[in-house]
Length: 587
Image 1: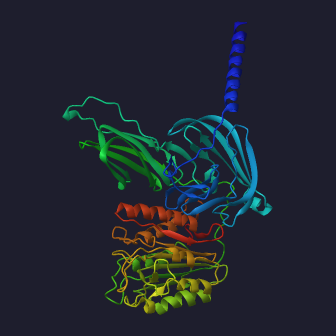
Image 2: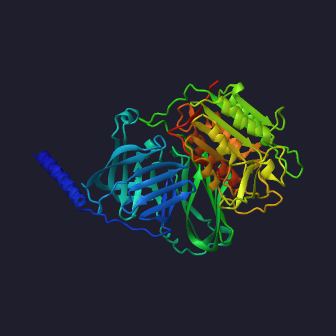
């Protein structure tokens, strides 16, 4: 009898607890937040800062090529990661204030890296629960919101059935603190790892004896030791404190310094958030700090990056049975002594040619190599023949064409007034005259003519050159041109036609570096590694253009910073869907 009574009491307590919890959830409300410039969201996929407003939208940026654009209702309008775009047009309209049970539906277009031209879809959302969510930044009360996108076109549904995901909005944090399901469409799932709030100072302590001074305290909040991450882009978040004040902080990734900061004057506490790009496999992260008296401390953590398996329902087309053509150009020693020689550009071209004709499976009679060591030298005439005649007469409509150039780029005064920066840009043939690039250089605008002459619908150009005219690297200024601020708007003009993509080793105002330790230009080194299979991020045996660029961009930025440089690859142009370049291990 007593047991029956206790059981009834226990069940009654559970029912009461359930009803109380349900009542709290039913009455919970969240008003729509507003943000001001400079606010930060520190998440596992990046430290985002509100950098500008676009009409009625917020633009949060973590680094170049990584943005989130939200409506005032906090609905996603556009997400850019590694220059791959996911876009909702028009975005859904979340119903504020948030309450459990609210829902909505709308029709619109959904653009992803797989469907760049857009998919007509029904977009649904619902507020399903108000619950506790545990994150590295703490536990929050949050609204769980489910999203789904369902294609309305039957032929699209056969390739891809749709997308579902969840996000959690925490009123106390005034932001989404967690997201799941985004990896299905090529975006990172995330959790908030810290809040952009003042870090409480450590409690005062009695000054220790000089020989027993306590070192700074380092608490790494993210990532966890031994964690396995499925995205190479992440954030190191730590709180560093000392009663004597923190004077200097550094972060190393695999022994390379990726961040340093000095605090003047020293601060009692520092909230550190540093974006990093992981290498595949085990990565060592070290956070070190010194206090105002020079006492130091370091904290080491190991994490593993392993690319996620291919998403269910997302089908990447295998390389079609088509012909593939290439022209590979590398110039190390120029005919005129006033043009500085380059140590590795000819080697870059030779190794890229070898890669294409062996591991990548290109037929040798369809790949043309021009270097200062080959019988057919890369003169202006030969470069125009190779690109505008050989490729135009050879490549068919369904074929793939790859163009590779390693050598000098140079700017010269543009008397036409077409360029916004006032400078025409040139690739520099081996027989160029630095005092007259107009007559002897290969103008970048010539690529437009070549693109029009080539019948193939997919043409990809890799340029390991730069145009800043600065000292060092793969660039120089003609005798009549002083180095100045160079922009890359000319690349937009060159790639207006669909199916034409140009990937450059650096931004127009930067220098493309060569490194003796690599025996290559940084860009070409990682380009070759990516073609060999390192860029096969989803491990499906195919390296796509999108994967290749994402890999090369991350590695070049990381390596250039490690050697004191500042190099950011750029990709301009548009292709329809995923463009497979090479099957890993093909012959």
